[in-house]
Length: 136
Image (cartoon, rainbow, N blue to C red; front, side, top):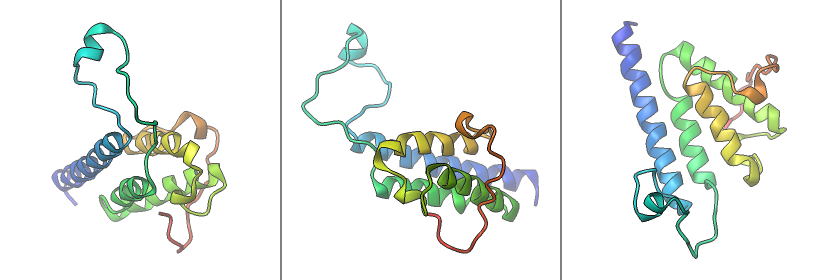
């Protein structure tokens, strides 16, 4: 596979991940860091909405986009990375990671997508992520 095709595949994956993250931010009542009165005053905007994190659907969309992107080797690496995150939380699937840990788990996934090893997993290299069961 050519480097151009690899870049195209990675761009598609990042575009899908960005769309899922924007949807997640929008569903949680957050706004992208684009300014506005709250940013100008330096104070957070007052909201009546209870803060909620990413939904199971948001998580599933993000993880699925990551697992389905790139070459066969990239998919194998993605599967192993997702497996490491799942193992870290002691869950059987990514979507069963506790709600209070979803943002942190997605941050770890984002680190992997950007080619970094998440700090929480830096010393945990034994997660192999193999198995035929669904990881989402």
